Image (cartoon, rainbow, N blue to C red; front, side, top):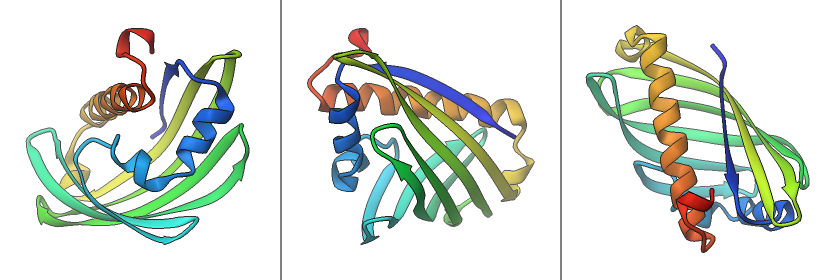
Length: 154
């Protein structure tokens, strides 16, 4: 399954790119994030808690940046499993693209290919898409607030 989301941020693409290079700053915008450990400049481990449909789970995930071209795009792969709650695992391939709207505005396009296994794999496509949309909206709002904007300008 492929999920596509996008949002606009009121900062130039180069500034947004620099922000995305700082895992600690980005992590503060991720909904449900409990901890992040930087393993290397291109790999980190996170613990994140989410509710997917009727199930709640805490995931331990390793994310690796596979490719990047500043300030245009980044490609990631993630692998994880639940450590609490509903039993399951996940894999995801993600691409984040930055599109210059004008000199002070950037559109962020996120394309994800998630795969859930175990009990969580039984959750329907519509529920996963809705959860993805919800998380993207929460991330965008937190990102805008962190960068000094407001959600109505995003």
